[in-house]
Amino acid sequence: MKRVLLSMVACMMALVMQAQRVEVRYFHGKQRCITCRSIEKCAKEVLDESFASWQKNKKIGMKVIDFSTEQGKPVAADHKVSFSSLFIVKIDKNGKETRTDLTRQGFQYAKRNPAEFKKIVKEEITKALK
Image (tube, rainbow, N blue to C red; front, side, top):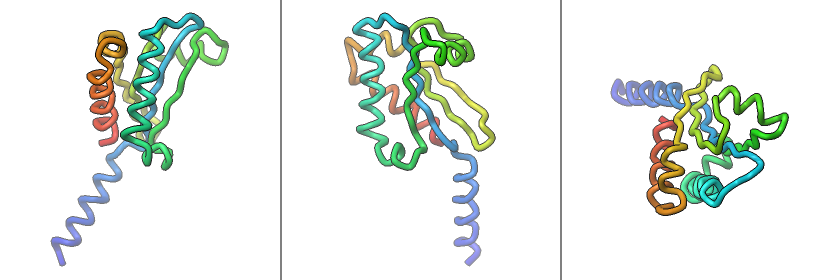
C-alpha cells in the first residue's frame, strides 16, 4: 500500500513540475528566403508528425510572427530578434518562460538536411515538456 501511495505522489509531483505549455515561435519579416520558409515548414511538420495529440490538448502550439507588422514588433523586441528566428518556449504554470533559440540550427540544417533539423526540434520540444 505504501508503495502505491509513494508512486502516486511521485507521479503527481512529476506532473506539477512539467511545463504547462510549450510554444514553438517562428519569427519572420516581410521578405523570406527559401531557408526561412524551410525552418517554418520543418517545425510545423515536427509538431504534426510527433506531437499531434499534444496540440489537440493545447499543451503545444506554434505561433508564426511577422516582426514587420505592428502586432509582431513588440514580441520580436521581447525576444531580441530582427531576422528569421525559431524558439522553443517552455511556459510554466506561473507564466514564466524558458526559451531555447534554435535559429542557428535552423539556418544550418533546415534546407540542406531537414531530417537532422527535425530531430533537433523534436528533442528540444521533448526536453521542454519535462
